[in-house]
Amino acid sequence: MVDWARRDAPVIAALTTLVAAKSRWGFWKCFDALRFTGHGWNHKRVWRVYCRLHLNLPRRTKKRLPARPRQPMTVLPQPNAVWAVDFMSDTLYGGRRFRTLNLLDEGVREVLAIEIDTSLPAERVVRVLEQVTAWRGQPQAIRLDNGPEFLADRFATWCQDRQITLRYIQPGKPDQNAFIERFNRTFRHEVLDAYVFESLDQVREISAQWMQEYNEERPHDALARVPPATYRAQLTAGSSPLTLSP
Figure 1 (cartoon, rainbow, N blue to C red):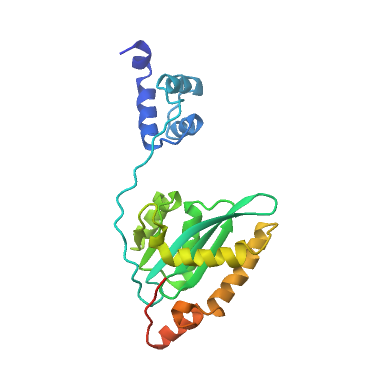
Figure 2 (cartoon, rainbow, N blue to C red; figure 1 turned 30 degrees about the vertical axis):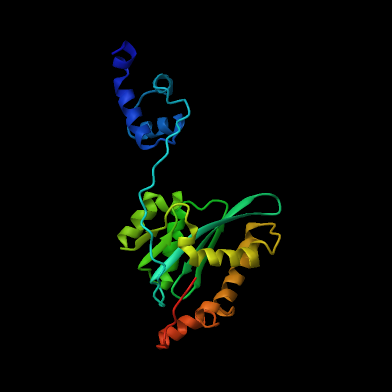
């Protein structure tokens, strides 16, 4: 072992362990994490080791997604059986991009939330779910894709703690999330492509109004041409359920 490697062995061990777990982190993120966990090495020493390990060079590591079995699209015609969640994106008039987090109850085709902001990380996704479950109750399962927000530990732990099954679709197969994909097309056509938005508040206001109309006034072909809220009320009253299709 060369002298520098022997002398800096503790730094090497700490850095390699950290980078193995957080391969996308850069130097300063790693340095701050080492400091936070109690290591007192100064940044010049850590940077020297970092470079000698060639960690300053681009790391093209990619995580391999686990195998995803194809999930059945059969949905019980009842509230809170399966929710579907997905992201969309668009641009304000000034060029600023924003995202929307759309949440749909597949069993009754009711929109539960359209969250809008420039950034919607996993923590924000969990906050939206907490807000919706507070008044709606929680679903038995959630259908979703393999986006980083949905693979995050924070999101997975929240669902696991509540025994909510996560039905991940297969990568590159958006048709396996057909219910919300169909909703997204409608939202895109009737809202995102229909208006020139100058602010996020405008997007939120128009989307909230449209969501209420979608749930309470807009007839849905798959629900015997009644709005989702009416269909849910009929189910609650004991009317005969219908066979649902995307």
